[in-house]
Length: 316
Ligand SMILES: Cc1cc2nc3c(=O)[nH]c(=O)nc-3n(C[C@H](O)[C@H](O)[C@H](O)COP(=O)(O)OP(=O)(O)OC[C@H]3O[C@@H](n4cnc5c(N)ncnc54)[C@H](O)[C@@H]3O)c2cc1C
Ligand code: FES
Image (cartoon, rainbow, N blue to C red):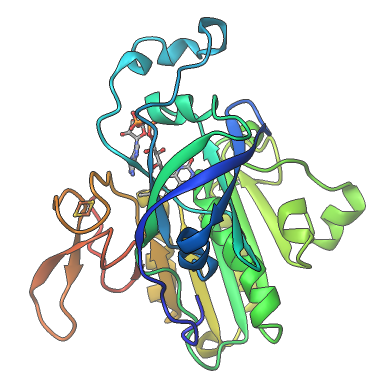
C-alpha cells in the first residue's frame, strides 16, 4: 500500500486452502497459501486491492446447512468469478499466506463455506489500486460499514507495521451486533479504554462500535458516531486522513463529512465485477473531472476500487 512498494504483476494463480473457520452466524475466515509465482505476486498485496475467485466447481453444503433464504438462489450456476479483498496477508520466504473474511450472501459465498484444508482455488490477482498514504499525515481515521471491514483491518495492520508515527482510530458499524464481522469483543475495561474490537486492539489500534439498533456500542449510524467524535476531537485536518469501505449510502455520507471538514478521504467502492480486469465494463463509477463541469465513467476494478471521495458522483 505504501507508495514505496511497487505493484507486482497480476496473474492467474492456484492457492491451497489452509483453513476455513466459521466466526459468526454467516461469517467465515478462509486461510490461503500461495507458492511460487503466486507467492511473489501476492507478497506485496496492498490493503484495498482485491482478487477474483473461481467458485464454479466448489460444492454446495448439505441441505441442512443452507440458510432458508438461499435455498433457491444457491442452485444457480456460478458463471463468473467473485471479487474478495484480503483481511490479512503475510509473506514468509517463498510462501504467501492470505486470509479472506467473508459473509455468506449468495451462491458463491455459500459454496466457499465447503472449502477445506488441502483444496485448491483458482484466483486472479492482485487487482485494483489499493489505499494510498499521502505524505505528512499523522492520523488515519478508518470507517468500516458491515463487510467493509476486511480491507480496513488489513490497512490498520500495515499502518502499525510501516507507519508507526501515524495514529489510527477505527469506527465500525453494522445494523446489529450480529452483523459485525468480528470474532469477539474485549471486556468492559478494554471498551472503556477504547479498544472495543480485538481485531484492531491486537495492533494497538483504538476502535468504536456503532449499531443501528444499539445492540452494541453507539446507537445509530457509524457516520453519526464518527461525526460526533470528529466534532469533539477536532484533529488538525491537513494532518488527518479518512479511509472508508462499506455500503454506498455510508460512503456518500463519509464523503459529505470529509467535504464539510475539508479533509482528505479515500473510499473503497463496490460494484458487481464480472471480469475484474477492465474488459467487461460492468463496474462503472461516475466521477467528476477535476476543474471541469463534466463527468466520466471510471472502472471500479482498474481505476479503483479506491477513489478520492471528492471525485465520486454518488447515486442517490
Ligand atoms: C473490491 C471488492 C472486495 C470485496 N471484498 C469482500 C470481502 O472481503 N468479503 C466479503 O464477504 N465480500 C466482499 N465483497 C463482496 C463479494 O464480492 C460478494 O459478496 C460476492 O460476490 C457474493 O457472491 P454470491 O454469489 O455469494 O452472491 P450474489 O448472488 O452474487 O450476491 C448476493 C447479494 O449481494 C449483492 N452483491 C454481490 N456483490 C456485490 C457487489 N460487488 N456490490 C454490490 N452488491 C453486491 C447482490 O446484489 C445480491 O443482492 C467484495 C466486493 C468487491 C467489489
Ligand atoms: S469488472 Fe469487468 S471491467 Fe471492471
